[in-house]
Length: 138
View 1: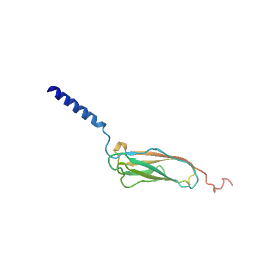
View 2: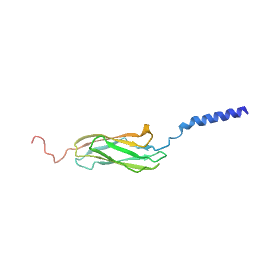
View 3: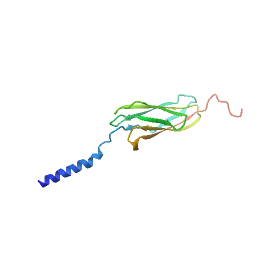
């Protein structure tokens, strides 16, 4: 009888110790890319890019904020919840009337648990010179 009690105790201990290994519940954002590469783009061209993400969690995911590192970078995000297993899209627009290297960030805040609710996406590229610009000094 005592052997059975020990076996039950050991099984219960193993069960309760393994419980933290169970997948996290709640919303969970997943995305394939941390960098959006614009490449070399023409002056005043379409500066919009799409950043796709998925809710791989067990509860609805909300993006509560998406902010560019400067006024030249704007992000529009879904205001409604993204249900578990579904995808969402953030539209990122860079002002391509700013000639030169693109090196900006978009900060994404979600309703994920506090220690995992902030994500940074980098955008990189280069805007070509304005073909209609007058040369300097002439």
